[in-house]
Length: 432
Image (cartoon, rainbow, N blue to C red):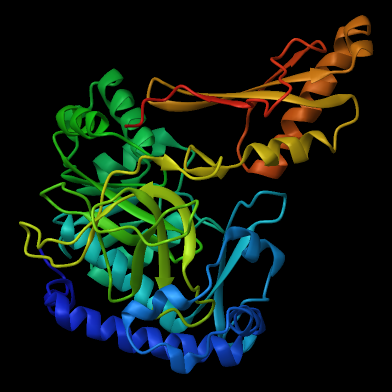
């Protein structure tokens, strides 16, 4: 089902004209209302009058997550703070989160985009949907919730952390759709199988996102649960879930280009790549009011396809992500930077900067193991002191990153060292 056929199936020529109009308006607004962007544009020798069409986007400066960190929390606001009705956030490279602000209109547009995604998956106002993403600063829970309500569906705000209650509600309330991470949905499938309850559910659809997953995982969850599963993409910096979603063709994620202008660039030269070429995804928020972003570097490596899809939608499709142009990991739906672990270690006396992160996926759940070298004296000390140090390190990582790690303390020089750039991470998950 197509929720907004006028926009989602708009002829490419009309779409580009709309994008150009919105881009010109956006650039004029941020130039006059955001000191950061005015300074960046002046340094680049760019004036709002230089932006006449969507092709002129290449004249504009890029925005990075470092810019969000440096302008924390309100430095990129394009409206008076009194117009902000919501703050959401995700983890950054240090203890400070990346904060994004939304006006009432931003929330309406966000809801519209998520509604388009849910409609793309076949969900209608007749469905009952459980939202199994976390609520709070993380965009997943509230993003999916408002989109489902805008669709007219019945929403059950389950959040995370209580699988038994989720299954009870799934059965008792005759839930037909669920929004959650793909690894969690497979965990739910296992629990249903173990309890012999698969024949009790009425589930038909799943909207899964917040972490990378594979076609094999899709096939597995569809077979085990008898459902259709769809991939939803988003990031807090741009909006949250609902920036893009795949349709029944599963040939890429349709990005809502009337609101988000996508580009693919070479992460080294920063030049635009040709259609279909692999590079880094860059997004400009064409309609966001509270904290709009020009050419935000997502660091996600992918390509764009522009042919009209079999489903009839004309909007570009983001192809399978091939990795990152930085060192960020997505673990249990949370953005994790190795530098965050390093930052956490600096707060605990007795540890060294030498660490090694191992990420794996076991029984459809992400594992997060961190080995850390500690000072020699702890290995000749009482065991209880070593255990206290381990607990302190786990707590510091949890406070900084937002998820729990399993910490192993090791003796000095037990981990690999290098004269060049030391490798700190091994990701054993098969995500492509």
